[in-house]
View 1 (cartoon, rainbow, N blue to C red):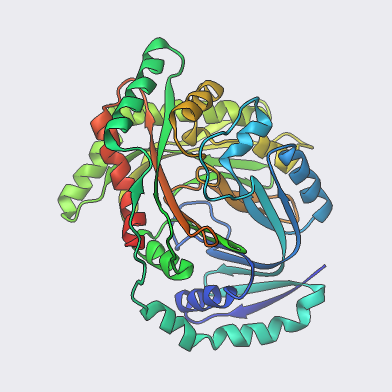
View 2 (tube, rainbow, N blue to C red):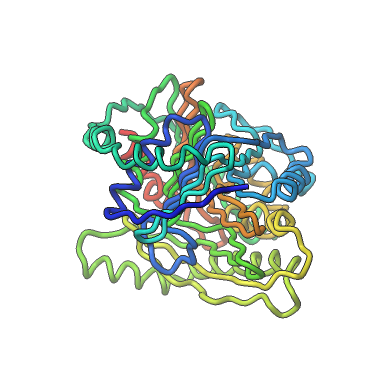
Length: 433
């Protein structure tokens, strides 16, 4: 079905830039870049999928069943996303909040052209109908020097005036309502999010993504394009990966700002690792993830490989845990996702109660934010990130949005939670302004 050919690339970072620039001619683009971040279980340094041959686009009704059928029939690489609102397919829930972005609830496509980069090796996999274009495409991409460097040297022309969907006083009021639920015992923890947005706005998506990626350098960066809708993501978080029988989840809970002073920055990371509140947040979600993975795992195979380990990124320190399991025989790859979705780090515990309370208190439909982007391989392996630290753009509606949130527990201080949101929003605001 696919022809494969390998090439040696001399300057990987430059080639990646030229490849992404070349991809902009297509209506369907998924670019995934690990930014050479160590110790993240990544199979590739970067992946590009372009030019849809077949597609699946659907709302939440029977979405996972439709995806399961599509994945099993296609038996090929498929790339796409799952929005947070697919919670309404797996549970008796609704999403009625305001939505200007208008992303379909689920979207996947089978690319005609696929590029896999590992170190200085490039593997191109083309469907047979276009495999005669492979060598010429490689030559064109390698010659993209002029347009790529012109793109890199552009100064931002964005003129984005950011508005808050929830103003500060209202945020504190909603947070106190959330805390009342926690004190009453309705939930232990919930992830509460707020939207920052701009209307009647035009941005240059690739330029904005390149800026966001340069200042963040995350391990799960994503440029996604589907016609006139874009995701520009600097996500530091993996949702779920399947490699053979092994399932890996890496929830994030716990954030601290990076500091310019080296010693002070080290002290900040150490303080995060020892912070009782942040550790309790993380451990609550680890327990939730363990429970979710146990639904498809062989008995006794769910293990915590890393608990509350602090990783340092360009903008923030993050507390990350790694939970693994061995999946039972004959479990569909899609069912592994269905039984763990949405990810616990973006919901709370207990999950269903947390999602109900979130829906009542938040002002905006989450959509692709706090959903997942990734791919399935022909063998049924997969890798998906968590869509956070991301800019969403509907070019037709001229609407730009980014959301940030944090875990609320009984120990949460509303002022500190608000400040943490601003820390998380810093990179997106800088990329836009």
